[in-house]
Length: 136
Picture 1 (tube, helix red, strand yellow):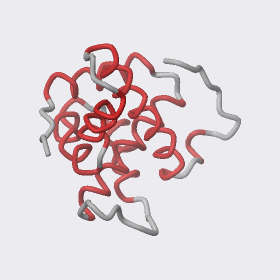
Picture 2 (cartoon, rainbow, N blue to C red; picture 1 turned 45 degrees about the horizontal axis):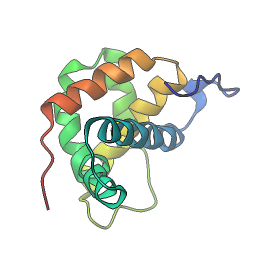
Picture 3 (tube, rainbow, N blue to C red; picture 1 turned 120 degrees about the vertical axis):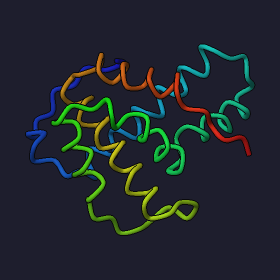
């Protein structure tokens, strides 16, 4: 992964929303890097296509692919993220989609902060292979 990190705060004491904050950036970077490396799209088109992977709706669908692949510890982190209290909901997502996307981002943030970059790549590769984004 791009940066190695050793958090000063115990990862078990971090809120799921804080983990999701990191996981959101991890997913965004993975999607952008994969798109740039596999297409010749112009920047404005790159952004449009990337949103087909990083929206709450898309992340909810991606999670359906990943859930059977998760370890028990990963499933527990995912559950924490899904159950995290949030002040708002994305305007283009259902509550269920928003909770699922927060759970996925929480999981990715947790894996990243633990230095489990190979596992992140494994899960992302599964999504990239199996997920078919909806075209709008």
